Length: 220
Image 1: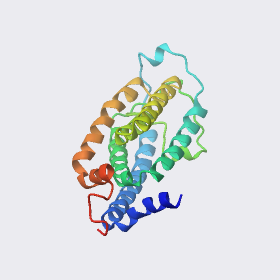
Image 2: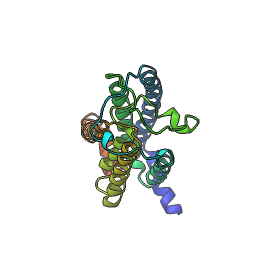
Image 3: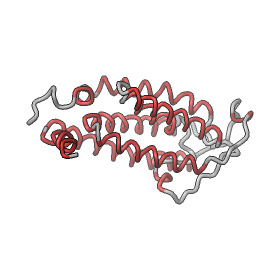
């Protein structure tokens, strides 16, 4: 256990890594604030529901519990993963912030209302801070776990766990009629693009994510 802690703490001896991590945390925090106001605005200005070829042919399933607690388990699991992969944290937070900021714009471009018989998700839970009735295009529940799969692609087990989580959330939001099918399908392609855009913009953090601090001066 001590050796594990020592291996993780050495990252904090690297000035460049620490600065990048602080930048990432600030940027991610700003993205969450933007997401809150964007999601609130999108919900307040949501228009009427539209038709959906897929949703109109499947019955609505009460998946509110899976939607809420599945999200909670996902974030707890991700926190434990990063305890062993701190080198990927700055890149993940910055890429996650880019994902959230881009989605904050997208959800307000077209003011479509939730599907008519969408499952009601209780508003008195922590998820309501991050998820809104009007933040439809594109599906964050589908996209974010897939983003994690791309980030951990070299770890086969984690890659498939996160892909499975993405597919599971896609199924949940469709069965609950919480997202239109285009929200889910588009999330795959948009997330892939965001990941590759981050690789171009965040070369320093990509280096940390792939090689840790071994490729830089340990003292910064």
